[in-house]
Image 1 (tube, rainbow, N blue to C red):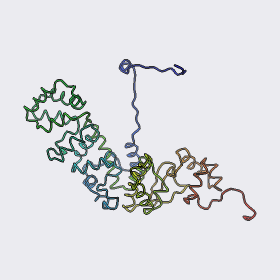
Image 2: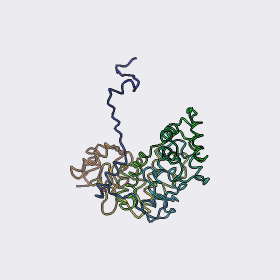
Image 3: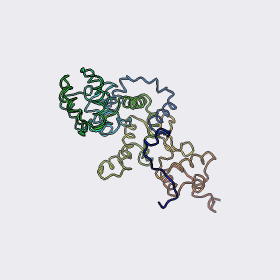
Image 4: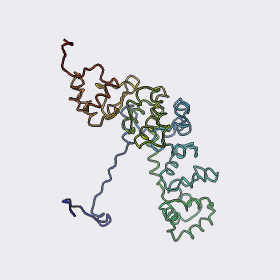
Length: 378
């Protein structure tokens, strides 16, 4: 009541017939695929969705030419692949043992549902009652399965809708006893009905398929265009990349990664993100790729570059260097060589602490402290 700002408080459905609402969301996957297209020249829509080497990333590390012990015991090549790169998702892959693209779609459906995997499909698969091909993974599975069992299509649809919205699990579906009897009369197994009664939310299959197609295209580049993949990942998806920790060679990276992992229970959110990025860097080193020292005259503000078969990190990977400051460095470098550290700081508009860190990292070469000449220089 005390502010000058005028706002409205309407129920959305009171105005939805005469309001145009645009959901414009930023999404990393299309951005990353665009960068991969620019770096490699390949058309992402022409990437085959049945390549065996790409499929093997979700089964082992063979396509990367490394062993699990090279990357801290990680048994899969799925690190850094959208939808499948977390420890939780990789454990799902190990439990379900996917062999084809459609299995990955089903796994994505499981991962985005609520009470669909844990305490449900995972239990059924481990007990041998179901497989990744027969478990309920997306909402569409229920309707198509029940129609296949001979249930009326409208009834199958209504069962799917009530299960996927969590009404059956929440006891808010008065027709469930009758539907349950119909399912039993059509030889639907007990475990299937039990699974339906657990589900609180289910993902649509088309949505899961779209996500997996994006992930697959990125995974294809990981196998066949590795430097482009790592350049795109570090530029777009790495949120805590640190030049000092990660770009000074494999030995230094391994030291810091071991240190972080030894105290994993007390890490901050930023440190957890740093570990995630470190693991992808560790994999890159294990595959035989290296970073170039950051060159302040050639480096880009936010994008990694492939130069002479190595990766040039972006300027914003320096600790304390924000986006604006990184852009300032890139722009200032276009105006010619820096005369001193003071000149660099003035033209690039970066803080003294960042300049000092860059000096410690050897990124400013032999630039003197200031432009002023002393008697000794004369």
